[in-house]
Image 1 (cartoon, rainbow, N blue to C red):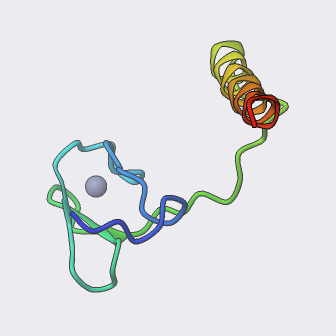
Image 2: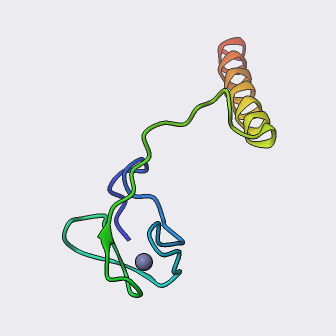
Length: 80
Ligand SMILES: [Zn+2]
């Protein structure tokens, strides 16, 4: 599977029109999905992630990753 950009090609699990789960990726337009139940072809795009409103666990994880990165940076500086 080719990665055409994390923001534009999200994996879709349910049809947004009829809630059917049987979706198939289509070639054209790229990144679009076809619902086998209602025959609609659609794309879903992620506009933004509102960091202030993501669930606590995810925010915690992001904070931990950030702290880890900052720690790695400072460690690199002190060991030279
Ligand atoms: Zn559908």
